[in-house]
Length: 88
Image (cartoon, rainbow, N blue to C red; front, top):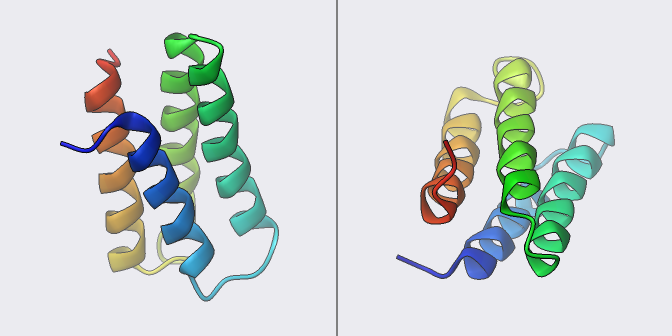
């Protein structure tokens, strides 16, 4: 299992690699960056909440701006971060 910061960096890179260049991409990357900041501040609860918000936003865009495969990859990455953090 990769360290949480590497998982978050990989997740941000996955979002940035998507063929979407709009507010959705910006919002998803912002959530990942905010989670990194929360972890730097030792605020695991906030990082967990941000990953939940990330997953909800991805799910809301599945079949719209994101394909099912893209969404599944992003949700898998975010879920991996949650598991590493021990999120409820």
